[in-house]
Image (tube, rainbow, N blue to C red; front, side):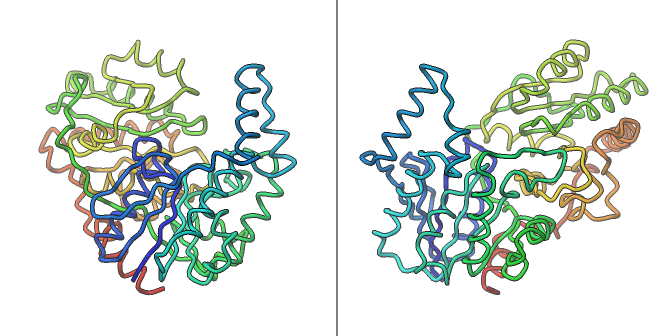
Length: 410
């Protein structure tokens, strides 16, 4: 089968979404499919064993010049026209120029695919908007939906309403109606989006974020990591809605109740956390067992740490439901270390780990978090290898073999 992948970015350092997209692309190649990847990274990035084409930005068009004027006004005069423009047009001049650039490149291709897969990241669905304008591709199009869209369809506590939300709704309803297939990283997300756009239920299939092989040759352990200790790691952005307060308080209670563990234990929080900066600084100042890095850490370094800590933590927002499958989930599964899941009862991570999985808690249940950390510590003291995840079912679920079977069933 020939697959044309149209993707926002294949730079794994720019976002968790790009990491997930690259892993999916690599596993499609590993599964034996013939791939051509058109990407809008605006860098000449190549992936091993995959033919990649870097789409060029159109730089001689009215939209391009309007987008640059808009940026100059914002930078030099502090005039932010974005909300006004998006309210009127639904999207920015940059978005329209970007999607026109993607359309222009796709029109020139000679590759004749059996399946067209659009992948995006963050709040951007530029590949979807571009392919929507190419009706000749709709009968072989799979629109992959990585997160709820538009933003006002996120579950609480996410409560964003974007300018031009009504136009964005119209756009995504067209995506749901025109694409022959749709893909989602989680069952809960497919059900969630299907409640707003019913066609997704008819066309949807679950394609989880993928496990992939990454080189660790250049990765070294940072000086704040001591492999001989009981290390708990949360790696990833701590958005406003993802407060680590319950985790940190639970860890502090664990230390208070087990003072002998203070010399052996370390909680590592790595990733951008600007919304929680003051709180994290206070915790780190008063707790020598806590290390916090508020910023981006190279992926190879994080991946190596995930494979060598005692426990990997997946922390989600306090909510009634979390339909997301975190992009780091397959990395944590592949690392084969116990996952401490801090998530709502109705969450995709909890669903996959199973009702019988013992290391789950609501994100703000301090006493339970402390008790779980203590249990894990005692197991670690007896034998560090007792903290292996050992979930062959999940290894298979995020593998190239499972992906091949899923695609072939379409």
